[in-house]
Length: 200
Image (cartoon, rainbow, N blue to C red; front, side):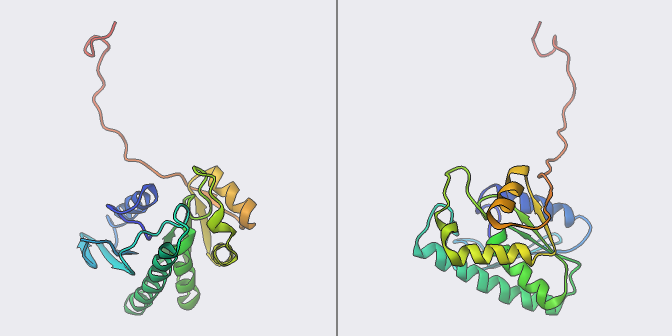
């Protein structure tokens, strides 16, 4: 995932929550973007975090300019190179990419080369940013082609909502996609009566 807390938004936090749960029982390696002030390599329990590429924001959906494309390319190249070395070092049970681009493209390539199963989770802004109605970057034939290739070449696809699944099918003719909503920790509270809460 090119986003990883404290960098990025909901997609990165969703990826971190999933990785944190998986790390309770097994080792998890994360390939994410470099960021100013953050170490290139970090270990947190069973999580190993590798940051690569240039410390620039990847935000194709709102920043359609040259620096975003450079950051996108640098992350893709760096994550692929690091991922390839890690795949030679370890035998992974699976590759799970968050966002179709750029991470999904890296995951699909690594899966093709290694035979390791690949799951790609579609978040929204990786295929279309419905909040702004922004389709401009996705009108670029190269970007559209990369997204379509990634969706076709991922072993499994998941979307975080019915809307995201619908967009992927409509815009890219994506194959079968499961909907897997982000989970949240079970809330912990002590039940109290209306009187205790000061209500009638």
